[in-house]
Picture 1: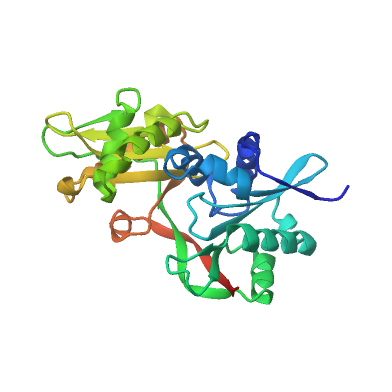
Picture 2: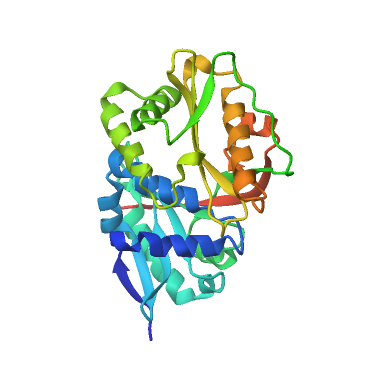
Length: 308
C-alpha cells in the first residue's frame, strides 16, 4: 500500500509521541519527549498550538500507521522538524521530497520586515539524518552558523547535595498552584503582565500532559512562601536520560544557588525512581557547563528562503 498524506488531528498526539520515544534507540532526538509535551501543553495557551498544528503539521501513513511527520513548535518562527518511525524511513527519497515540499509551503514564514516578500525556513537536522541533509543541500538549503547542541549531565548513582539559602524550601507539583509556575516563569524570562492569564492557563494545560509527573515539578519558595524558581523534569522508561524543560529563577534571586539546587533535587528524585536513567538533558548556557553538563549531540540548522 502506498504512503498517504493527511493533516494532523489532535488524536495523533500520542501516536507521534510513540515515534519520538522509539527514536531514542538510534539517537538523541531534537524533537524530544519534553519538547513534544511542553509545546502541546503550554503553547496551546500562548500560541494556539492545537489549532496551528491542525492547519500546518503534516502526517504520512502506511497501512494505517504513521510513518513520518513534519512538525513545528506552533509559534510561527519558521522552524521545522522531521519525525520518522525508523531511521531507515528517512532513506525513502520520494517521501523526503514530499516532506520538504510540505515544510517549505506550510511552515516557512516571513520575517518581521517582510517588505521584500521573502519566506524563510529553518530545518533542524540531527547527525543520524544523513539523507535528509543530502536532500536539503540539493534543494538549495544552506548550513547555518548556528546549531542546537544537546548537553547532558551524567548520573553516577551518587546523591547530589542540595543546598538552598536559609529559609528557602523546595516543594513539588502536589503542593503548588498553576499560578506559582506562571508567575515564576514570567519573572524569570522577563515578559510582561498582559500575558499572565494565558501563562497560568498554559501551565495548567502542561500539568495535564500524559508524561507529566507532579513529583518532578519542583518549585523553590523563599522565606515568605513566594515562588522564586522552578524546574520540570520529563522522563519515560523508553528514554536513556531525563529532560529538563523548563528551568527558571526570578531575576532578583539569581546567583544564590537556586537553579543548582533545583537540578540536584530533580536528579536525586529521578535516580531514586529510575536507577537506569543515565543523566539529565539541560540547556546550552555557561551555567550548565559549570555544573558538569557535556555536549552529547550537535544538531545542524539548515536555512531555506524563497522570494515571491
